[in-house]
Image (cartoon, rainbow, N blue to C red):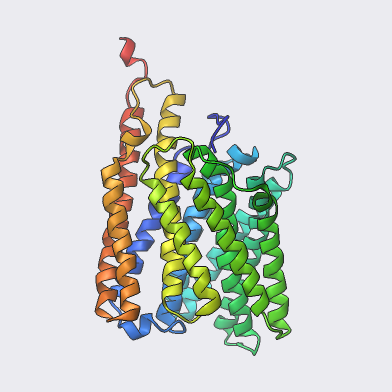
Length: 418
């Protein structure tokens, strides 16, 4: 994933780190929001609190991590260099953070002012980010499957953002017409299968062989799936607007995404160097959750387990696994590039035992969230408490790695020879 990386290409380490450190803070807020509200409000997908909670996750966690990671990956994987990376990161991070808080708060507290501030700042963040992304990616001549997937993601992500801004504009004006809920469904599907799944596919094409010394996924999946998914999303939107039956399209989504997950799991299970790596658990849990989610999507779309498994079992699990790979590598890489010889190994920046504990607590929270939909709402609050703890541990683990990097970077790299 990071082969050929040089300090001239790579943005400063503070660029991705600020996004990775912010995401679990939103995770803590989500846990507190669940803990402080009745279960019937949380389980009602149309309640203002739940809509606010969903956007805390999709913007504060999902978008935050993806935007942070892409700023690191763009110059490395695509040779697309952002000229002023710190200024760019400051603008995106500030507006995304403020926008997420205000938009979610606007829904939760029914505040038109917060919705206006939130939509305005998010419009700034998304328009600048996707303008830069599309501008850089569509100049790239050598297209790997990952870069091609990133190009498709840039289109799907821009459409998702435009739909979101249109919907919140209707909400602010109170002009909610008959098409509103159709566009809500289109926005949701573009967010789930376009914004999130396509970029995760693209990253998987590169990460699985590089980080885990595993076989490549089939070329047909790498070369065709992201574009086919985008095409099916556009078709779904047209069918929905024309009020045509979309069930066949949903079946195709289910088959495509499940096949990707199956082959990704198969690749991970056939690694050429089967050394134990705790981050593999995040990937495998994520991919299994994705397959189960797709089964529920086509057979039981209203089952409350579906959003829990897709958002927390699939998306957040995988993103945490990515963070635990990227943070130690970047810490090591930047120190090595500065000429330091005595550097912790990748596994020493964050101890595996600390990662395991965080994983166990995180998966326990997901388990209790699922139980709350089947047995008793009391499990919802146990799950939210564990979810808060897991996010505290995640941010602590990232800080530990960042602290080790900072402490070493303050020393003289040539001190070993004196």
